[in-house]
Image (tube, rainbow, N blue to C red):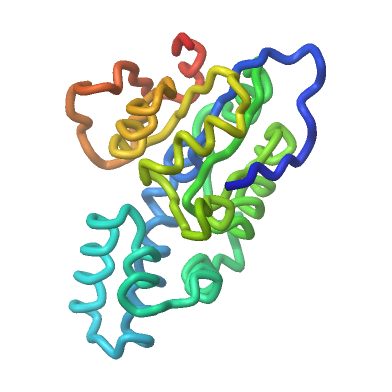
Length: 230
């Protein structure tokens, strides 16, 4: 597990750490980007496993539900090269035409008085390119992409239980808040003493269930992140 710093936090910054998901947290991905990623993953399974579209889609979903990422199922059951898979399932030549930020996220991101780290199961090339397009990249201190979530020589992206204590050790005792749209990721983080905030802003296409379990805080706009106490 490694944290790749884009820029070091300045001396006057709070010791708090904001761990920020990307898709459907820092921008709206449900309308264009996520459906296209699903299509690209389905085509990948069709091609490399010689499946028809329906079977490929079902298997993609099955692996996502079981392992938290389709990639992990492909690696475990088909010895898929993770870098090849990621390079061929996050292809967006024209990010400007498919991405959209919600609210005044760049301004709000910049105003967070703490270390701002993007923690995403997306590949680094896609995540960095998208953040630059949306004006977010210059306000981040670090990016932890799926390629960085390697623990004991195995890929362990969200929501893997072993990820969180390893990440906490890298933060060296600083208090952390995870902001994510996926409840399962938040539940695992909370189990390991990380504060959590579930973002369910309008436009995700589902009605969120009530809060339960270890996740106690929910926001509907990124701007409301300041209401999370940690």
